[in-house]
Image 1 (tube, one colour):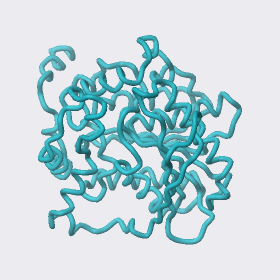
Image 2 (cartoon, helix red, strand yellow):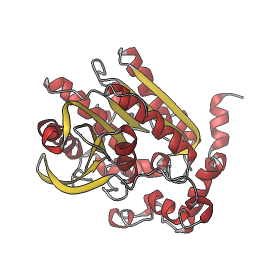
Image 3 (cartoon, rainbow, N blue to C red):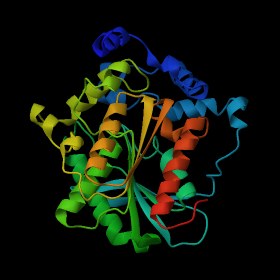
Image 4 (cartoon, helix red, strand yellow):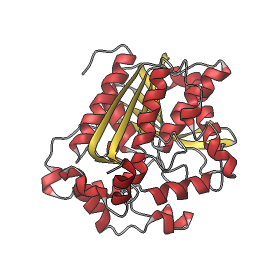
Length: 340
């Protein structure tokens, strides 16, 4: 049997049956909230659908999950404010760990296909990274499609980077220790910040953490076919996101979208996290290879029984705890700190 025959046999299957038990519990909780398929939604409807974060909150009412050891994130302090974007102000949230600063700084971009998501739906990751990486985390929102199509989000992301570099000390950070991080579409924004900073001769991040990033225009990869019917992200959703963010078909070949076709030399040390049950897994794997060829130090871990969006579920999913520990260790090492 050829690979093509194998992939054809996978069409129509739901790969989430291979999820780790705790990951499956999150998916079941999400299903119980009766989300409407995003690809069948208007943009307004899509932004109102239940999220993985909602599913985690529901599971936390179950004693089997709420009794798990706490990650002790309550000590992280938050402050909401507005930072300059490319065309006006954007919401942002500062996460400050317990202890005395100044702290290293991480600029974080949330996911949501450049269309959905906000500071609240993606609160778990920056909160965890602030605690575990002992860093200030600035979670920066950005203009979203389809109201603001390519390259609006990317322009806002770079504006956020410039602002953080200029204001790190005022925030209580170490100006010489600033990293970038993002999930999914936010991972795409994060690596594009590094590329644009390099090309502009501006300060580069000292490290980048890319969590299941969107970095390729290949929608017929192995992972896209394996996970065309996956949850919470599937192939139809990705096509819906892309159609909402591009101006025309020519944008599909833009290195802003097809990052793996860009010049990746001279980028900062990188960690890449992928999930086995995720259409974007092959994107991440190809990016790792391209970074290695370009001479960029890169570490990669794939979590086979996890799905897209798993990284922020550490309150209930062990793979997320493991992934967060992997990323925070890399960040602390980049900042020159001893491991926790």
